[in-house]
Length: 298
Image (cartoon, rainbow, N blue to C red):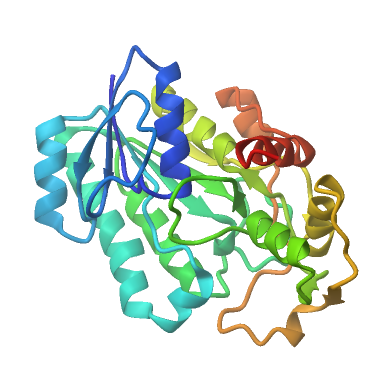
């Protein structure tokens, strides 16, 4: 089987690259905009591909002729999406449309990475039958992308939550690395206690993506960690794991942060379907912190 994946320079993409060594029976093509920045491409080759350029996408996809495309490339910074809606639309909607049309042209199964932010957070944790109602422009673009994918004949949508992990040369951080860095410096930070999530180790999301890809699983699957917690509790776990003080942390509610984009208060996922149908086996949050610590050399 030939598998192409987008966003290979990002956190998820780097973890998919590293995992390809365990799938030697398949051929992989990593793609991202510009040059490859991934130190470990595993068993994958690389091709530059800008998902907002339909001609470029078609050329790369037609040349490789993948059986499956894993589409992880996206603009995921929620506030930046709110502040730069045109770019968010180009990357999250037009980019998905270009990838979906290229997949249709070559008859490839499309595995699309989506988000808990398509929900309003009033009824979390959610199963796959949850009713979307995004609060942010990011959520709106990802929901529109889901509809594009569902118009195909062969597709999987993997919804995920608060992806965490360690990788090389990332364009943005994630909450565990942010919290660890702030706690180490004794930096005064405000942390919300009224937003709840099931944080997801990037390696686990890569595992879910490859399981869905190699099985050509049809439908929607929730892919996240198993542990439901508030953001404040998450930071507390980080502090405890790395033996850091919480003295400089102020517990606040979301209304005090004045963020450009609204966040859903209570999401998180029921991952029973992915465990049962795909064989998905996520790390606990404690195990995830241990993986990150090992990769950080701690």
